[in-house]
Image (cartoon, rainbow over all chains, first blue to last red; front, side, top):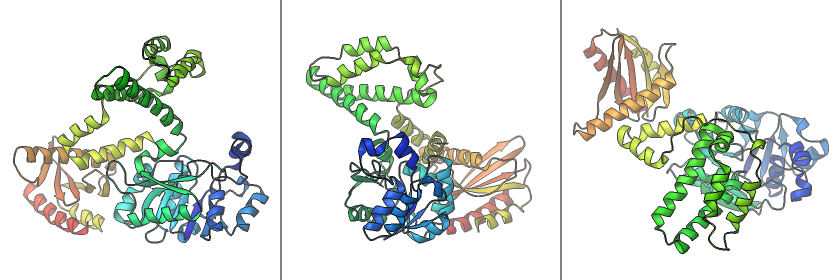
Amino acid sequence: MKISVYGAGNQKLYLEKLKVPEKFGGEPPYGGSRMAIEFAKAGHDVVLAEPNKDIMSDDLWKKVEDAGVKVVSDDIEAAKHGEVHILFTPFGKITFNIVKTIIEHVPENSVICNTCTLPTPVLYRSLEGILRLKRKDVGISSMHPTGVPGTPSQKYYTIAGKALEGKEYAAEEQINKLVELVKSIGKIPYVAPADIVPAVADMGSLVTAVALVGVLDHYRVGRELINAPKDMIEKQILVSLQTIASIIETSGIEGLMKVLDKDALITSAKNMLIDERQKDLDLALKIIEEFDKSTIGEKDVNQTYLVAPQALIKEAVSLIGQSAVEGMIRRSSNKLFE
Amino acid sequence: MIDRILLELNKTEGIKGSMVVGKDGLVIASQLPGNVDAELVGAMASAAFGAAERTAAEIGMGNLEQTMIEGEHGKTLMVDAGEGILVVLTDAKVNLGLIRITMKRAAEKIKAMF
């Protein structure tokens, strides 16, 4: 398979800030360059595009080249090479610029994959004009390493499949190609709905995991101990998650800190500490109790509408139609990532 | 190619500019005056056309063919162009019959391109 990887990975971050070798094991290079090495060692024809040679030391570059990876500094040269294109590029405008540069040059039926820097739907939407008119053959997905490439715990690649909203950002054959690629390097492919990939595979998985514990605990306590109706429990979970998400969206973490009265929350939540199995809540109460708000600061909450987004979308569809609403969602989502 | 159709359309007397947007508001081609924000107008056209389409269906008028927004200083006409909407901005006083015929012809050509 012909693979193009964009970005070698910030070794300074891995080695000096995150101290990856000490904490997670493995050996440098980590990140995109390690992905390129692993693909090449599995027999694939790999090009790694990295305009900044200084991102790694010479001995690390030698490891990359010794593995059979062709290193180039020009993104367009890499674009012309691969049937699979993997963006291991910095968060933000740089990635958008790279992808807009390469899209015109990639071979027919190529698939372009993000890693952890931006969600697949956002990547798709940044290219939508071209993808819908000129390059209908190109698919968009992800090859999210779900860990740091080069560490022993990096076992999965999360591939963005058909989204929960129903959209297919890549053809089935393109997704299958990614699955085969992952298997070829001895890793586990996890095809997840495109829109949930960041929540399960990215750094945000911390939030997902902790929130999930709260959801499951509330569900168990509500159903088994309080014997409350399932619908009521689900609505309570929804309102809590929606409240936190909405305030963070309009007013940031500082707004959330301002609006949530720590002591009142602890007092209220203590009433839900019903049996000894709730180690999660017990620990959460201690953490909140000891948490120093001043480390984050506070600010006034901006106007925030706490409406259930799915219900709102249904109402909008009934008024202006599916297509117009999908356009609204696309534009608002783009603004969220601007 | 769509741009050529729009440029031709813009030669009609009274037309100030035109564009084609997807039904979701994505700008496909635009030949609007420089002072008009094409992306914003495209999004608004999609919402206005969608609302008109839903209203027509709800009151049993059948498929929507055309929508017109009439303002003090001009009109905005929107016609169905298959997967897209053809949007035309005109002066206030125009020969609407001529513009409608011209738009219909252009819309047929655009439909064939999707």
